[in-house]
Image (tube, one colour):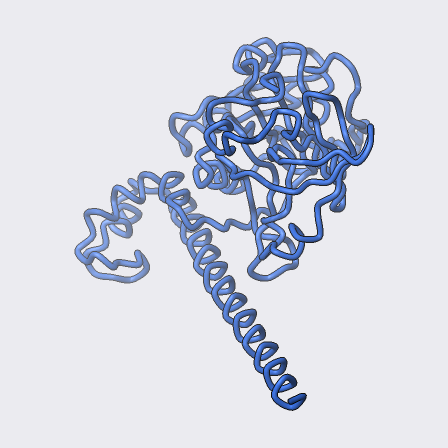
Length: 352
């Protein structure tokens, strides 16, 4: 299973009495149906009723990249009976579901943050992706795609904008048409490590995977000549092993990326603001209207970009709102549980 990412980080999260033939990694997830890779081959799988019943949220269900214990039903089918702890989790707010998270993928070592030059390029969205990685302690690499569509001078302008705003993160520029940048990309990817591509639909994520795999393993559609936008048909998550031994997870495009950050992800992304905050007059400074706020002073003097500050405040508000809705949801569930218990107890008393 080393070929599929089994490492010391995985081993230390799995009980010593688990037999290798019981161990599998989720390589495909699609509407609560899964495909597992094991030392004995590939199995179609579902979760047990007990696993479903004890799950407190969707985040407790298996995701692509997860390591699980399973039981074979026959030569093709299996039941997932246990989900092992993850060493990294890439997650966002579940779209349309208040107070819930959605697992994008798990047990990832490095994430490629993909944007296409031109229509998709957005520094604020890039900072969101970076915050997801910092929260999960996943190493990020920024990838700009479709550089064949613009002049080299324009590509440099995009890179300069990123470097001015986001420090100490590797940046790759690639073209799937000319193969420019692919040797640098492949040099980064190491055998037995797991990589993930994050980006909006149409930025070229699946095309990159197809190029790395040396054959079309993911469906793609041509770029529209009128909009320069690719049309991406990936609708589920899937894990592949590449010829060089590295492991890659392809995910559907994500335009909505709500942060769930309860760690230091936002502070790491906005390191400059975090450092300035330590110089504020008041320890509980909100950096909005307080006297002696070093952050506001830095904006006044031009040492801090107002655009960076605004995005920081927006992400902080999102995080605070998400945390409060999670608490409210848990409280409602707790109150509902108490009500059910009270009704059942009353029925018992009435019976006797």
